[in-house]
Image (tube, rainbow, N blue to C red; front, side, top):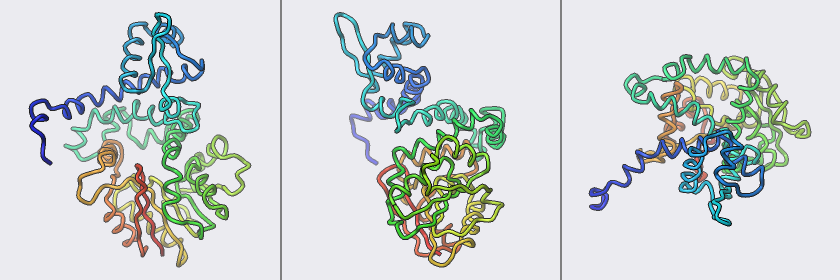
Length: 347
């Protein structure tokens, strides 16, 4: 890739990259302190001093934070009768407030509290080729996962995180292929039922069963899936150990990227054995380009899988190999133009 003479003389791109973590942390801090939620609650602009007083922060610190958020186009600023007032932008109101149905707040919180700390050990992860979760937090990622089951509050936060990305990508991934012929669908690791809801919305004849661990199923039924949604049901189980019931279509959304190739092949082979001829499997994953030039978001996600798990993001050809090795045929890939794409295969 050629670099312009101007860039060589003043490396703006590199300077932007150096500032990247500060930009992220500024947005994270504004979310954590409740700036966007407060401005939504009051329904109008507030001064820096008023925001600081309501949120219990220093006046000077809040003034600097709000100014930076204006620079990041997360807040609007105007002067009225000699007073500087701040208000949410449409973007922050829609995606950074907890009450919004399209909120990304819980993803932001996870980035701030978990990914940010894991990435501080990225150099170690690359040297050692393994997760740095224990180094970052003093416990393994498996111990953390187990701890979620001991605290309903923590588990709810985790499930809200898993739910939030489908606010912006869910419809696209379930409509990338025409799934209308599949009426009995199992969403393996379906968590909150976000994908299930998108399926029954897009395909009026479909029924979706969320297959997940008992505690996840209990929480999903209590907090995320309304009893009125009669076409969504639950099945408790561990898809690596317990039987996988018969279905027309199996969906695995952000599941395969968590595991090594061997474990992924083991799971996909179990799914294939549960399939009848003609049944399908739908993988929803972020895809790397075959030429290794992007997309940068997925490349960063793959580094994140290194610092946190044993998994990785993959290229289409790698998913093709896994599915064919598991016994699936006629594998097709569709890109949505968003973060997550879709891989479909049949038995």
